Amino acid sequence: MNRILLLLFLAALLPGACQNQSDQPAKNTSPAPSKYKKLLAKYDTFKLTTDQTKLNDNEKKLIAKLKEVARIMDDIFWYEAYGNKDSLLQSINDPDARKFAIINYGPWDRLDGNKPFIEGIGPKPPGANFYPADMTKEEFDKADLPGKESLYTMIRRDSTGKLIAIPYHQFFKEQTARAVQLLDEAAGIAQNPQLKHYLKLRARALATDDYHDSDVAWLDMKTNHIDVIVGPIETYEDQLFGYKASHACYILVKDMDWSKRLARYAKFLPELQQSLPVPPRYKKEKPGTDTELNAYDAIYYAGDCNAGSKTIAVNLPNDEKIQLAKGTRRLQLKNVMRAKFEKILVPIANVLIHPDQRKWIDFDAFFANTMFHEVAHGLGIKNTINGRGPVRKALKQHASALEEGKADMLGLFMVRQLHKKGEIKGDIRSYYTTFMASIFRSVRFGSASAHGKANMIRFNFFKEQGAFAKDPATGTYKIDFDKFEQAMDKLSTRILTLQGDGDYEAVAKLVAEKGIIGPELQRDLDRLNEAGIPVDIIFEQ
Image 1: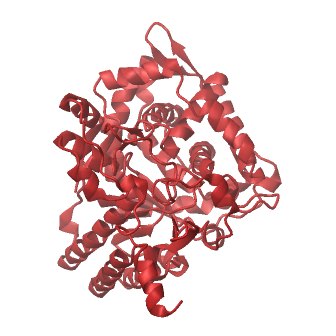
Image 2: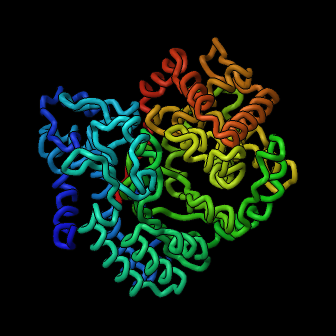
């Protein structure tokens, strides 16, 4: 095939030319508006901002440029999650329904197991729009297709119906070219040399789908005040295999004082890795030592991170080789974290936590639990111990939920260990009680969320272990702190073993049996809805 024919062939496969079934406009027979007002009530609004007096004119100009990049990531994610955004929104007459579709990046409710909320729309494809809607798992597995498991390819069919893998930078050619130009312009504006270097490399990464060097440059940034995470990052959206990364963008302002306070915890990682409650072969990997803990104000979310439940902390890069060689950076988004604590967690505790234990609900504990959740992603094991390859690939679509469950349990394990060493202050019961309230908060994200599913598993496991009991007199949950610790260790051991073994069948069984919401828990969650407590937040930004 000559160069001209090749270009024409690729052009035919670009968004708009090659549409998945989900691109088709919805048949608009919208129910009464009251339905959508009720759905919108799942979210409360929070304004993303920071202390602008700490931003100089150059930084404000840089942020404006980065927002342009973020909007491109938003458009790309719309296509990855659904298809043609405009055709969907133009087909919806009800303004509340249209607003809910924008929140969800499509016609499926992300906080209710991806149920369609527009009549005429069928179930969401597990592989979103990364794969042809008519493709089966068996067809994909049998296909001799280089790059099919890459994080950065779209799977489509050629003119003969054969599966093909198209690199992101080719599939999203126009959007990528514009984003590359804007990142180069942002690099020209940036005054911090580390940030400038990263922006240049990230531009090249978007143009080539090779993110290694830019990930290392991002990890090496220490002195920057403005930060940006941009590109295809997480694989949550691909619930068919968990292979494909979705485009996203965070624009962040570092709280330099808070970050200094957090820096000292990183040195404990090797010691904590060796103390994990599993045999030595499951903790033989050494976590990277070039690890940072930083606190930020988030001022812009776009794409994957802005869909459904909002991220309150970040642990990156995801590249297992970089994690083992250097480590990761853990970013605590403290303004968003504070909003969720005040608007959601405290009201939940006032309904479902026993009155005698509500005094233990505490923001510092919530911050620490969340922070060490992100740190704990670096603990445990990244590669199976029996030759099944990386855990992520061995466990496929269940890898994300199990990894989030691991991070929750090992994060709490770290809190306990550091508390015993006197490195963390306060009453340990505060961390456990706040963690328990957070289970109810995260379970409400639903089974479409890896975090939601992880919390369902934990709730049911802890219930079986007697870690808590429901008081019939008050209809609230009371923690047995001794049994709570025992359950924490047992579940940590089980998750780490499943990951190390790469036991897909056993993980699938765990998810099927415990990744569910039982009738009694559902009634309690209904009480939260009746009390008008939002499930999550949306942003003014």
